[in-house]
Picture 1 (cartoon, rainbow, N blue to C red):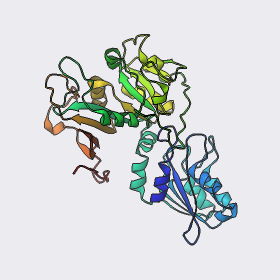
Picture 2 (tube, rainbow, N blue to C red; picture 1 turned 135 degrees about the vertical axis):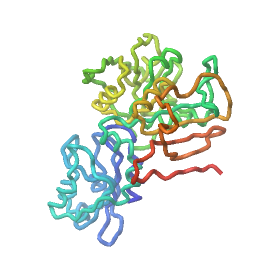
Picture 3 (cartoon, helix red, strand yellow; picture 1 turned 90 degrees about the horizontal axis):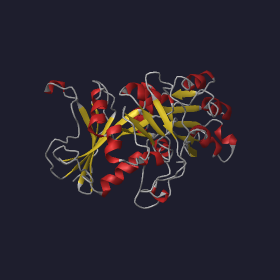
Length: 384
């Protein structure tokens, strides 16, 4: 199963489908074939692995080990449960049950066909490997990561509003790598008006992206949320004047702006490779619901203290990524504003997941503290 988890990481982290890996074993335990899912519209991991067998007859009596329960529906591709049955696979082991309302049920179909099935294999490790996608399917909204960079005393900018750059190149490169793994990047109108950001995922040195990470379609539909006024602007440009196309990651997060103020027609966001979505509302739940219906499964919130605080206060944050620079700024420009917490007993409890030095800066990753009785993600720290 750990090998299947490794294989799954070869697929794209963004998109409507999860990262899934599969290993097919002979009755004597030899590895016959391996596969993984390369994104929506491509063969699922089980079918990919079956296609890599030396001979289709090798599947008869074999065991399939797959990170996610084989799907049980016809979408862009056929059901994996049927493919495994037709191939003659004798046993299937999987890590986590499929939470999709239409795709779940593969285990039951396999068992009904006489295939031995066991779920829950290394379930916690599999959960962590596709946590954003599972969160989105279970909550029916995108997985939300809130990011900010701050001085050691918690300031996001100096008293005069200047903030470029609090952190160094290594921390900024890490931000761009994380942008390139999500479906959308979210800011407020205040950030757009003050900073005129590009919100692209960039790198210092042009590199080829890994196999299986083709960018998704840039098309965008109309809003289906009655409580959210949305406008969509499109651009055929592959870059803006400040960002040559050669420095962009192959996958770009869709830019999303929340707020009632109007964005200037000359804002650099209009030149983003992906269509700009504007939500003229402060209803974050409605915004996330509409994004989920559009196929967005993960968002990266970089919208400044006001928007970040609103997401935190609403209880909509699944992960915090905080970059701390070894500088002191003082003054009123805090990284977070009022969260509606009146007493220390009401503090939002978090679990620290990792701490890592990036050049001179410290990156902390934290998540809301798990409910009693659940297993938190293991803490990792390469800091000596």
